[in-house]
Length: 414
Image (cartoon, rainbow, N blue to C red; front, side, top):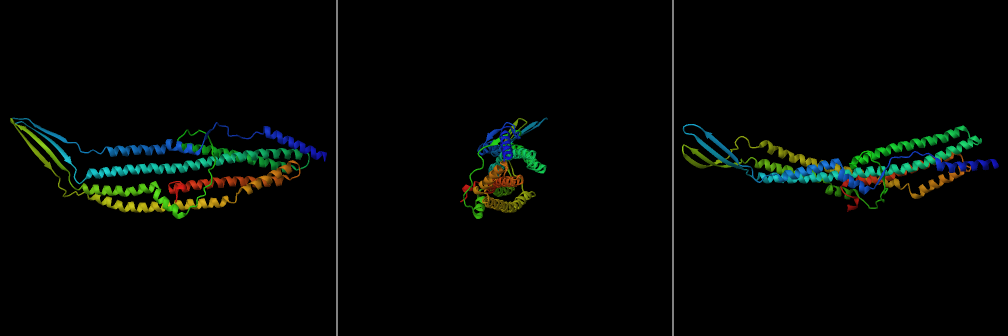
């Protein structure tokens, strides 16, 4: 009895020492705190892809504002030397007929609207990517916290197994088993640290921040959504709000304007000019009219091309609508699956596992439990906690994908 008590006291002493001096791997780089809102604001402001689209918006505005009201007049002169030298000066101005300038302005307006919609759609896609990257960072941080706890407990378990072996209570194989558990938890921690580096890199790439910057995600996962959603309402909402679909539909307007411009171009431009002529001491003035005759070239190529583009635009819209509904359905199925799976990880189950592990550890520390039993229960605890974190992150990622699929927050779905 005294021998058993001595072992117990030694184990407890080593347990306390381990808590104070245990060297646990730590992700040592200096990190900065960031929440999801700041991450999104930074990404929208600094993301290189969005900045390229913003420059395209500027170009589209310049193109619209650069459509001149009138074309420049043309000045021509002829000078002939000789006994009867003469000089002819012509000033001509060409006028477009058929409303061609109006069609060009309409096309430039539609193009500007399209580029703005591309910017909106780019923000949609970027928001999806940033949220998923942020939640992945949160997930890895939580896993690393759990991994540190497991390393600490495995280290304690290994130290206690060594003491029990020296006292003759367990075999060397059980000491090796405890060491294997410790090494396994250290490998898992190292793997998670590598994943964390990649998560930082992904988030920095999206945010446009220095690629080597380290972040500590704060705020965790948001509260679970309680809104009842139907596939029909989600599809209807998506087809109304998706910016890429709106942009695709604008292609129809652009093609229609191009068709009208092509037909208007059949009407020849009218040139009106004034002529001044000076010859042998005499001067004369006149007016010149010029109108090409559309006998051979009636712009058939552009007219027929624009007609064909109308059919193509209709097919493209139909294809995109089907693609959007497919994205909505896939995201909806993922969300429902995550909701169902999370129900198996209620607070009672996690608390029961934690209490069971605590009791088993206490029994082992007092010499009343078996090492193998503790390892089995701890492994089940680890697996369940890791699975729960994966499912929780998967649930929030599925909401992000669904919101990206419908083009707005799910809170706006009626």
